Length: 166
Image (cartoon, rainbow, N blue to C red; front, side, top):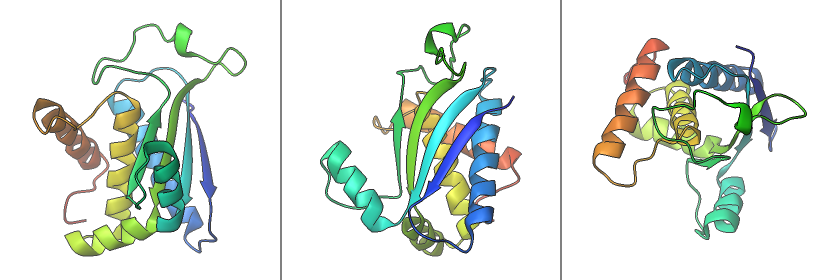
């Protein structure tokens, strides 16, 4: 399936190619694992803590940086993608605009160090996490929803060959 993944970097990064590759690979893996059988569009902003703090403040009224923000275009049901995506498709492009994500590479680096794994693993985890949010998954209840989301995250990362220690 050919998805449109728009990636914008707010800051110059020497690792731009590697970061883009990880983001694209993870987005496609989640969409495949979740059985999304229509071409989708996802926008990704790669920024730093100051950049994500601005977005967090303007969108969620929380004036602090965070690791990743997800802005789903639709209210989907976790694990139950629509059988007919016609009403979700952009009539001009034929793509389903699933939503936007914002990732702080400063948080990626800090959390990778904190958890003792490579930045690649942390970035992959946050991208998988964010795409699952775009597809209706959530973890606010600290119960069954969180458990369902964590199980999907770990399964998809395992499919990618990215375990906790990697």
